[in-house]
Length: 121
Image (tube, rainbow, N blue to C red; front, side, top):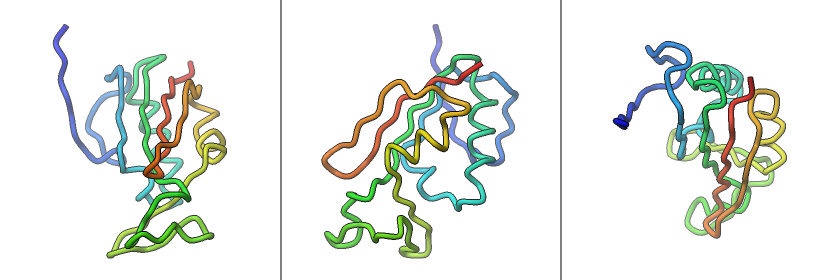
């Protein structure tokens, strides 16, 4: 089969529902403001086909953020004019668990949490 890639603003996508088998987010969700999280999750879910996959990579509290300093205790900060949020595995399960089955999750040595999820019916 032919494979094609699309890049766009997840909060304003022109694509119809059920269009994609897979969505990859490597570094978007952890920059969204909290009030956009629900909209993001709804958009990703609707863009994916039934049982489509989401690969999500986000900052964790172990992320070495600014010049070797760990993330602050409050789980977020504003850095160089943008918002950064730091998530735990529990946070991801709580936020995505209603709409997605979390199939696998791991944290790497750089402080990124990687999750493989599948859209629920």
